[in-house]
Image (cartoon, rainbow, N blue to C red; front, top):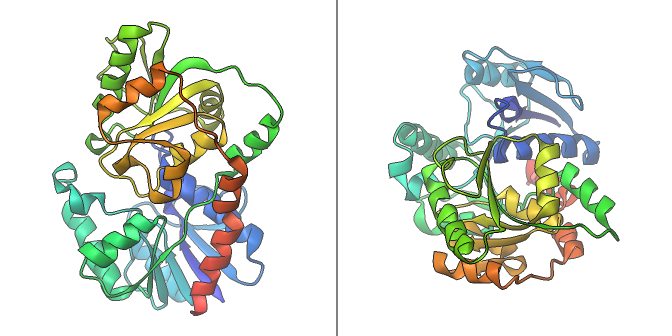
Length: 330
């Protein structure tokens, strides 16, 4: 079969390569690695990925030319990886939903809310299957959205660079500094201010702790012990995971949250609000109901037993590809 792929997610700007970029790069690599049966036609508006030959399309009008190109190439299935179904398709569509935060918190998405809702409606009309990364999102589709389409849960695999580094760490003793991490966009739904509140309470009792805000560019540079690092490349980010004690996530909504999985695989404990931790990851993390529950965990030096082998078995790209390819004909 010929499978068209919206690979636009790999073309993220250097300062915004967050979850969708990580997903797109790792999935494209996995499709080539684990599926030798089907032919993939990947469409992007940036240069070639070193693992695959893309059809490079113009940035302006990308969605239209992608749809036309897929039609001309006679793709049998189209993978809408970026919550968008291009026009002119003449193939079976698998729609990948990266969550419904805009549906539940429209006040944070004023500029894009209507376009997201339009695509959500289109997915319920046009897609054959809607694919989510967590049971949470599936339940939201079935309970909160008037959508009768089949919804499948395919949890993401561990990013390859993190998996490789985790294997290198086996048997070694990493010294962890009294450092707290936040990794993600500086978006209102992430509630970065809550992370800073937790840190300030920790600092009242232990001045040795620092807070590194990865992905945050402004707003907290005048607070003692806080370092705003902006966007980091993967190598530098991995080093922080390996040498920090805790990662904190206080989002109002998460559909998967790659930094949680990455932290756990590299031995960094995770503290998060229930809304920030998907069901598949809760047993491995400190799930808190209130912000005030977090600083006690840090000051007491609590640690979870992180069962890396269990994580490796649960979050595998080969399993992801196997289940995905079954949907091409199912």
